[in-house]
Image 1: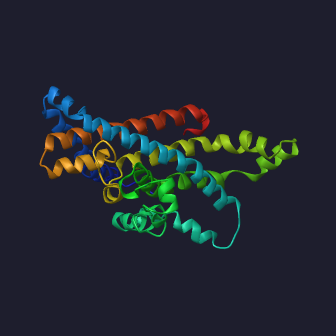
Image 2 (image 1 turned 180 degrees about the horizontal axis):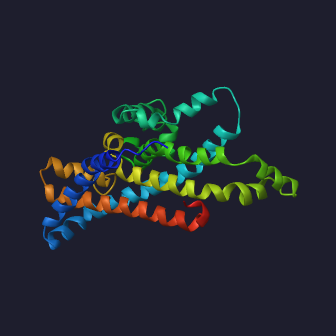
Image 3 (image 1 turned 90 degrees about the horizontal axis):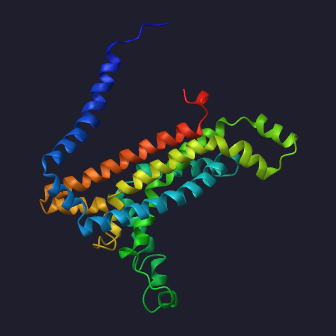
Amino acid sequence: MKPRSPWLPGLMFTYLGWLLLLPLGALAWTGWQYPRSEWWSLVTAPVALAAYQLTLGTAVTAALLNTGLGFVLAWVLVRYQFPGRRVLDSLVDLPFAMPSVVAAITLATLYGDGGVLGQFWEEGTTLGRLLPWNFTASVEAVVLAQLFVTLPFVVRTVQPVLLELEPEVEEAAYTLGAGDWLCFWRVIFPPLIPALVTGFTLALARGIGEFGVIIMISGNIPYKTLVATVYVYQKLEEFDYPAATAIALVLLLVSLGLFALTQSVQRWVMPPTTQG
């Protein structure tokens, strides 16, 4: 065995420190300098509370939808063979590579006023009279933006687990008389729970932190379509740094709490022998 390089761990911790720990520490330190009463009034302002509620509600909705549909997509990509499967598999990562402005323009072109589909909801049309809807100033636009950016997370966390499942275990279950549903719930689904929880949490955290697509298509109307990240941006534009810092700290604490919860759930659902 070759000797380990003693400088590699130091390089790794230096890189993580400058890139991750130092900025987060600076944000926490800045927020700590404000008086507690001022900080509390900023994070509990009515417009801030409305932004939290909208952000969390839409992010949870998008994460739940992408957990279910992402699992189905991962299942199809792993268990089915069909023309274009590799192309579809590659398209799953498109939200990672596509610039936010391109995604926003694409969604607005499709669903916005006069868009390919949005024209059918315009005022005066049949659907417009039955289902009056303005995409560019709606909660649905926020959800759709979060669905778009969080699509890959569940797929990419569930796929490796599905690939590692041993077909002999399923064959043994069928041999013992288990049907398709019993085999799925008793043999296939339990090993997938940690991956689904991880994918859901990553999608939820990413949805809470989404900014680029939402700011361009949601209208950013206070108490209606203004999410927390855009609220932070607006406060920065107004040079209201205390409010921007306070709201950013709330989002940071929520993200850290989500990842801590994920680790706890994974330890609970995984057998001790598989936790390493």
